[in-house]
Each structure stands twice: as structure tokens, then as C-alpha cells.
Image (cartoon, rainbow, N blue to C red):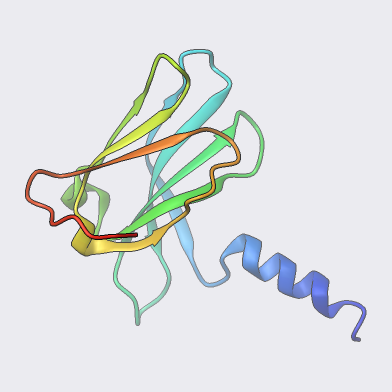
Length: 122
């Protein structure tokens, strides 16, 4: 039983058990190597809807980079692939921030706050 425990914990962490994700928007990088997605996340009745941004290689597992409270149509995030291959996520309302990944293993990610958001230290 103990031998399987680390595998179960690893699996739960990687799949975000209890949450479902529905694709709202998808954009490919100019070189067609990476995909950035805005996802509607639902983690159950006791949590608010969420907007999640995930990045992946074409067929690989997605890496979650960023989550806000509220539905995508309310948050109105904008994803832009830059000429240097980095991804810019703009129109971020810092007050709604739930998750931010600072280490970017797939692509460099730039974050831009919305004009009415109050900057805070991360």
C-alpha cells in the first residue's frame, strides 16, 4: 500500500482532482509549436468559477500558469504571442488572482495588469 501512495499523490496533484476545465479560447504560437488556452474552471459547488490560462506543446500535457476568480467572459483576458516566442497575458485584475506560476518551463510569460487594477508585490 505505501509503495503506491506517492504515485497516487503525484497523479492527484497533476490532474487537479475535483476540477473540470472547458476550453474557452485557444491560440497557437506563430511557429505552431505551442498552444495557449483560456479555460473555464469549475472545482465544485463550494468554489467560484475560475478563468485559467494553460500553455502546452502541441500534444503534451498542459501547464497551468495563471488563474483568476470568475468566468472568462467576465475577466476578458487577452493572450498574445510575441515575435520572440513569449506569451503576454493582459487585462489582469490583480484583485481576482487565485494562482500564479512564476517559473515558466515551456515559454516565457509576461503579465500585464488591467488599467483599473491595483499593483501589489508577488
